[in-house]
Structure formats: C-alpha cells, structure tokens
Length: 306
Image 1 (cartoon, helix red, strand yellow):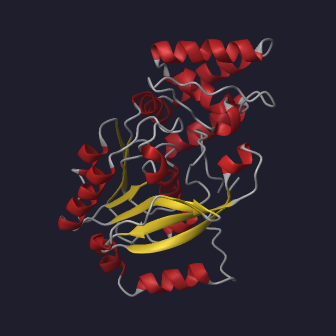
Image 2: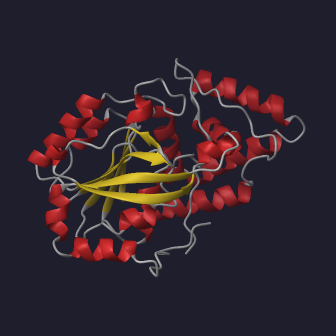
Image 3: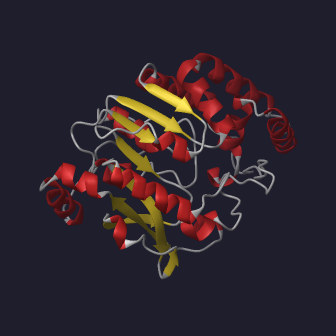
C-alpha cells in the first residue's frame, strides 16, 4: 500500500516512521502527537493498524485547520487546491507571492496547502512575526492536483471518525494521555528552538519540556521522543537527563536535507528516546526490536516509501 502524504514537510518523520513504529506495543488505544506537523507517524500507524484512535495537535493553528479540511472535507480542499494550481500556470512566481500574502492575511487552509506544495524543498519558514516567508521552488509547479487529491482522500478515508484535531500548547494536549495510550513527540530540537529558527512556527522552553517529561513519567505514560541529533560531527543539543530514565537509540536518518539545501553532503543521525513506562510495557521484546534494527540484514520496509 502506498503511504499517502498530502502535507509535504521538511523534517517530517515519513522515512523514519518504520523505525519508530517498531517500538509500538500491541495494545495502543490512542496515539497522541502533540507536535503533529505533517502527522507522518500517525498516518503510518493508521495504515499498519498500530492504534485504535488518533489525536493530533500543533500550536500552528492554520496547519491544524488544514488537517481538519483534509480529514473532514477532502473533496472541498482538493478542488480549492486544484483551482490554485491551475491559476498559477501563466505567472507562477508572482502568483505564489500573491497567495503567500493572502495566506498571511487570511490563514485560509487551501492557501497553506498550495504554499507547502510549492515552496523550496518543502522547507517551511516563518519570520519573527509568525508569517510564512519561504520562497517558491522555481524548478517545479507543486504537486499535481490528481496526486494531491488521491492522497487527501486516502488520508481522509483512513482517519475520519478515528481522530481528534486540536491546536493548543503541547502541555495541554499531554493532559489527555492515559496509560493505555502512546505519545509520540517530535518537538523543535534543542539546538534551534530557542534561537528563532525560521523552520519552526514556535519554539519550546527546554526546562518546561523536561518538566513535562517528568510528569509523564509520574503518570506512567508511554512515550517515544524524537529529540536532538547530529550531522556528522556537529551535535544539535545535548542528551536528555539520565534522571528521566529513558532508553536512547540513535537512528541513521540519511542525507541531511538542510545540508543539501546549502550544497553540502552530510549524514544526519537522530536520537530516539523510549520512556521507562514503554520499556516496561514492551518487556523483553525491546531487546529483540533493537537487535533487529541493528542487524545489517534487516528489511524494515514495513510499507513502501514513495
């Protein structure tokens, strides 16, 4: 089965989802993504039947408005995207900047979808005022409407009636987690979240985040965390405190998209943290999982990556 992804996002965990899903227990009630973004892990988990329900949240309200349209109004958002894609044909550069201005003024979801499909390398950027300011990719016109519509309808069919969508602070979203659920977090990383990095709609306070993890531990909540990493010898942030009692795994994420944009060739390694509640929930299976992931003969193609 082809994995549908209507929202292109640099930094999406689409290609790493197979590694992340390997750590899912068999009895997940609700998968919660408090930093949802492109919701790549939610989509992968839904396809593989890894949870009964899903909850996606992101502080970026226009993005979650777009997700609401994709899930509950797939035909409408597909038609609006098609109209924008066709209207750009004779004046692509100026049209893109016009839509970008209109999105920053109105936050209409179809405008955001068009910008995500057309911006450079799907590399979303915001200015200090939270306005979308990435330039268009002049080599392409954005995803063809037929392919976009197919993916939108596929995700809608997959998740409609099984998902909750909100836009609030991640700490509020975490309050709904129960011990039978699983939380997957992919927040802005330490090395960039406090420096006004344009790739992030908003950063997070490191100490507050650590406190949130401690509270999850106290409540016995299972969670998986993608946080920090390195590109060759350059490290983005330090390892999280040992007092959190998490299991740390490093995953080869392949060639760095950001270094590619800068004309360099560097491999990215991402850190994956497994909470102590999840380690206990997996039991002896966690060692089997890690042995499998480390094996050079392992075939982790749980589903095809387009």
